[in-house]
Image (cartoon, rainbow, N blue to C red; front, side, top):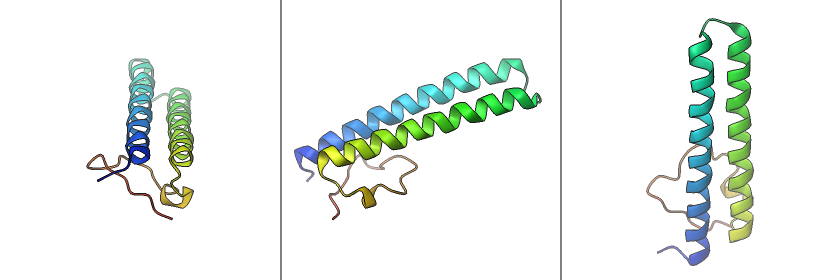
Length: 90
């Protein structure tokens, strides 16, 4: 069973993931109607995706620090925490 700090971490990661998905959808909605074959549009689209991923990583690391979870446990985290659980690894 997860501690209250771990549950807070999971909720923070879920919120960060939701924000990232909204940013992805917004970037696609902006990119798609203006033409998939236009290089300038693609550059703006990929920049928006990178910015969303960076904000997500910062949020996850901040939540981990707040929960007392070692940053090494989330260093390579690029996706969801499947099963909605996390363990404190030190």
